Length: 112
Length: 114
Image (cartoon, rainbow over all chains, first blue to last red; front, side, top):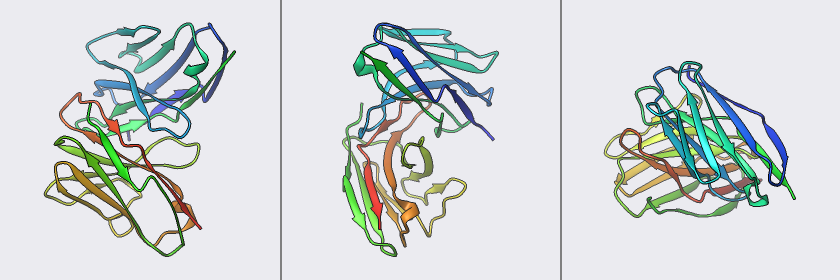
């Protein structure tokens, strides 16, 4: 069945450095790829998404890239700040449905 | 984005009892989903709550354990039945809809079963 692999599971970076999280999916028909940020004790919040007809999307310090041939997409955070510390989840949807399948999550720590 | 509320925000329950979680959305939405998030884990879809028909459950989840209601386009409930400590998790509802529609999550219900 469909699955999403996410790496790394934990990531520590120095404040100001960049962070990259990568997800690989199995269903070639997937066409929507959101990223969620979950702070401790809070709900997951959508931070950026990309659709299959686009290769890259940016929103200030965050960007997402998509490689449909290789079936992977990545989250890039530049100039990291302590408030970027959280768990990040990638997701895609089950082919032909509106249901999401989530990656296993990456715990990002930004060290001041 | 839709504003979603859940009740209760947290509860501590005894094993063998049941808890019903409510999810309210401030606008009509086609689909509502229920997820479970075990401590330190990712989100696992329990079921899709369909308005006017029975919920659609994912593998590993059954209606007898997790009955769901969806009486209208803004409200749904999830019941966790005959609870055991293994049911201790955060339960989240989310909204979805047409293709490409973002999913927004409720604040979650933190359940502890003793």
